[in-house]
Length: 295
Ligand code: ADP
Image (cartoon, rainbow, N blue to C red):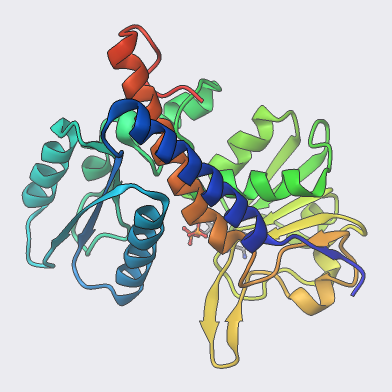
């Protein structure tokens, strides 16, 4: 393979250590550790695994763990009531509502019960508005992790042709906003894009976030491009991404592995967002006019 690997595990570890240092400093300063609240609804096994990992990482970094697990038979009103309690609870710096919710729940309506200042997943209407406006705020974790990995390569994003495959609220769309904020020339491809390979072949930076196993082949890649694979799919032969790693690595200049690329960044960014939220909340108690969640 000719591409260089972008080691998400190593970058994530650095971010986690940095978050832990800030948590320790915050705890010394205020006398109380910051708290992360996770809310899980129903019994989706993958979600249970993700939430367990997030809670463990948060505890290791020194956050207090507040966890609520509601049964699949609970009502949207029950979930809203839990979120409203957490919104009021001063010990809770960040609130995460694990997605997907069971069928029939209004995701947008419920997520918006999380105050912008505690929105550590960056998914509320308010947080997404701040992102669209280029104002400081809490950014969606996976999209922010993608930018961290690109920064790791040393590539200058300014003016670079960036193509994002996928326009989801969780990843594709916020990644596009973050790249725009870095002055990349951004193209978003999606399920209706005609001739995907023709679009992606122009990319200096390619973000694969379509949720389709092995969609991106060597023919999609401009030689030397940096390729970030957001996909993660369990198959009979192990985990695969949206990118055909073996062939793409022969053409690209940089590529992330799966696992060990974007995956670990999501949790690391969650920790960074939660300490950012705690610091901003504390700053407001000291200086009430401070912005709701400065960088
Ligand atoms: P994720 O959880 O990774 O964000 P989603 O399943 O929510 O993924 O969204 C998938 C996105 O990928 C959608 O925006 C969709 O338009 C895009 N997409 C799906 N199929 C293709 C395709 N064949 N080519 C390009 N984009 C695609």
